[in-house]
Length: 375
Image (cartoon, rainbow, N blue to C red; front, side):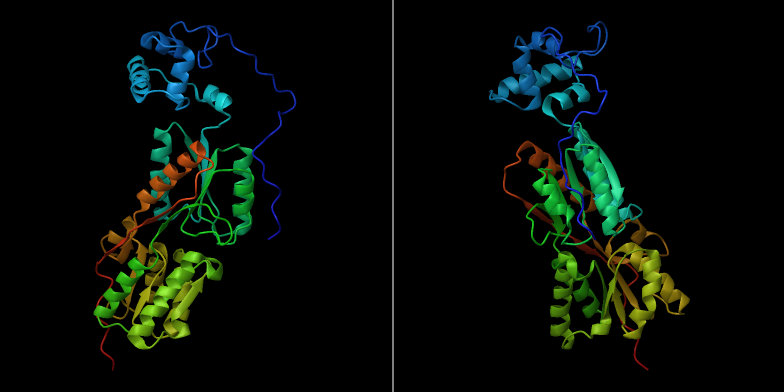
């Protein structure tokens, strides 16, 4: 992949744009054109209610300036009582913000990422921001294009689950001063804010569950290749467990995939069966469902012939007739945590990078059982 064009958060005015005219002090920046009349409640009215200056009220509502928390609370209470709402456009011009953030995820069709997006959107909307969502489908060129488009739209920051841990866009975005939070994968050379799931403990819980049922030949699918820190951490955990349980895994039991969807799951079945496993750990629920379909097409039943354990625990896992044993990830909390991190980064650009690691748990259902007796 070629180097993307330089990223910049500063955009010159477009030809023909009308210069902004300064507004008189008596008409605040969020008053509707032509005076207040019966239109939007203005910041001046909030100031009169509180007996404070417009500047003090503006600082209280924007979080700026130094003032007693009691004063700030009194201003906010008055604003709520009057039904005051600052114009997003005016606030954006004043603070040089668009009040819009981007979320770039691997697969918008995967229910897991829908829950992450919902969690992020709820936090951002409560802060008066909008969320733009794009899907890179594990394609580096598509991811680079989405990032450039978001920058052209002057977003205030980006939440990104990168296709690899060596993405070229990540250092470029940081160098451009764009607030950035990564999901799942850390970047190998660029420190950033980061939200992830502990890749070791949940997988160990799932592997122990299979071992307790009597499985020794456990296959695993991995996403992201060797450029993914999360995939490599899962592989290290898997190898360590299999070394203790069975003297080490056969390489054929490890199947790397470029994508984790239904079609990829069906296509992976021949490679998985070649190693003669009695259980399979799939990278996510969609992949597990594809593997299940492929096993059924090959005349094999889950769990009677092979046990199947998934990661994600979306609503698909619990559907009647599916009932996948799955590692339950706190999907909405991932989105919420990422949104809070990026808002904090916008408010405090110079603070130290923070990494949030969330727990997961195993939801045992009907897709795992003791292995079929040999013979």
